Image (cartoon, rainbow, N blue to C red; front, side, top):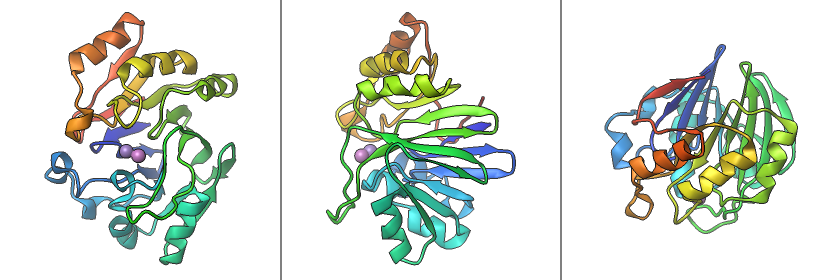
Length: 226
Ligand code: NI
Ligand code: MN
């Protein structure tokens, strides 16, 4: 499985013959829009954790061309179905086996409104069991005790956690989250995009090192193989 960081909370995940795009926000991110062209992105599936602008901005433009299946919570799925796209609705605690593997929509402590203020359901994260790997994509969330449920059900190969603070947990809380998740391999995201969420990379990496864990911070366009 190959995971490519496309800036902010946007991920491109490839394995077998499948491609999954998570939370596309590229044209609104000056750090990503130069390097990544959304017309080149033709995912089979788009996974959306919640309805905030910095997670859905480029969904329609990409979906118009690529015709992916959009997977999200019920309200977000219905929002895109109404606009003529194809979507699969989920809700917290529910799993479903797709062609590529199994997904579970899990709790996130955050909010979820569309840019116009309309209701975007409850925010979540995804547990992805696919390509022989188990990945947790946390979405925007605070540190939460519910994370302790995940290793009771799944041995994670990697956890993708927000570390930028202010709107989500910061890296200090993400170290505790990694403990709750019983996972030593963390990919950080949702940091540095805006002034509110700029972090000191060295301090963040040291906090994970000190806990015996690895924090990976990828440049935009950079990939990690797991
Ligand atoms: Ni958000
Ligand atoms: Mn966000």
